[in-house]
Amino acid sequence: MAKLLDRLTQQVGGDKQLAAGILTKRGDMKGGKLTEHGKQRQALGAAGRAKDRAAKAGGGKPGDYAYNPRTNRATKK
Image (cartoon, rainbow, N blue to C red; front, side, top):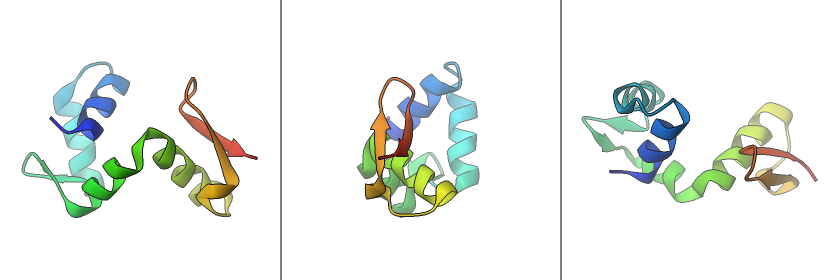
């Protein structure tokens, strides 16, 4: 199973079908396999994805943000 799917499954309370549906809707998964976009997101890891989300929401570059693994969030440095 993909690390991205494992991580999201854990975050949604263990419901693998729900997690797969979310990834499919976002374009990260198709037919039970990761798409190229999904593979790129998985390669970022949890910290990279959090920084990317924060940069999109708050502006700037992902490198401008610091990741907190306890909260799975990134804040400006």
